[in-house]
Image 1 (cartoon, helix red, strand yellow):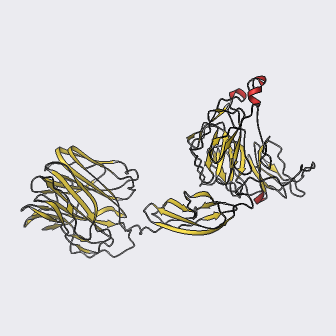
Image 2 (cartoon, rainbow, N blue to C red):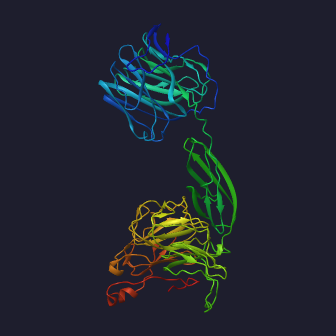
Length: 615
């Protein structure tokens, strides 16, 4: 064996080749040096592998979809001829090894870029040949992933056992990858790995002269010193095998990946719990990529934030499991108490009076003098009122406090004192037509013609922080909503949206949609599109949405002829459980539309406190 310092090779072959008995060996290593001191290097872990066999002048494999930026990748290609193999774009040639006169293995390496996953690693051969390709990817490797490598080739006699050459390991945290390839002239093929090896890839072509190859590793870091030879057994006897030992070096600039820390809050004012895991954290280079919820009653969920309705009262255990981009997980639990009934299972609030309201108005409510009010929402749990409209300012009217606030489109004030909430200051780049709170008082939604809230993209719908009015990042509404939102109605888990749109949050829905109240995801199974605009100038819209107080039915006031392909001029009722249009139909517009010139002018509706009728 001849030994030399490791170097990149611009062409084929190693820096030195010598015959030792029945084997030709090249070792790229630097021996006789002291090991690098131990440090808080990253941990190398196996990421993914893929393989393919070819019989043509080109060969390729697709980089696995889970490969991530900075992963170290190895690409072995073994051919059944002594030919030239091109270097794939972006890859580095490490070296090649020819066995006998007609079996050759070439090794390339690469540090994965952010967009490499799903791309091809392709080579061109100087002539048609049978080939096998093996691609391995590892997380935690250094910017130059290959520290050293050694290759060997069989000569004579034929045999079934093939030993990789040993290699020097100079740095703590290194990983040793082994590769064996052979040319077969018969149908028998296959490999038996030595003890302590974890198989990562195996591939075999077809027909005479095909290439069979297997790759493995130690499945953990190896100690500093000499990595021993490892012997694999082939199913067929041959003198044409090539064997490789590759030492991967760990990233010394980055510490080992640390498991994320799961943390969440749970708000369960009634039978519906809202959970929020935005307080969960991870340490670079790790980032949290998934959130999995177990609600303790057989129900599950995903996402940073979501809601879950319980059907029985009592103590419930909620478990959150977070997973980061390097596969580490962490879980935490929280016990909550929920109450079904006794306050409504997230029901809509009913009026606080049992007879006509006094005819003397309150005189401490704030004044809006430069615009219109389009919607008002009272949140009893917070003792607050939210106002939406096209105004630009709002002024206190209390004795000794007449402060004026430049607050456009949406404002809040105290229900008891009438004083404007000075901390609630959202800004919109368009109008706000509707404001709606969830029955449990934990969520606030707005809809209109805006595309940003506080400069953050929110396409016509947003969920706001109840204290500041800032848009919630967990409520994703950044995809296209192509026209105005006019009305909203909400349960604790679902937000119903009505308007003039034909696309909402990137999903094709005409005039009416249901979205997840926590995430903003559009419910594809809620399919109640409107059609046949009979509003002013043929306009199709939904000026009002109302839920019955038990949330079982959605009243839709609209300027169309049909809902879900069925005639429902002006008004329709939808069963919220089945998401289906109900048979109820008023003939008011059917019988009188022609008398008013074929135009529907309708704006609003309300439902009786006992849900027995609506007006």
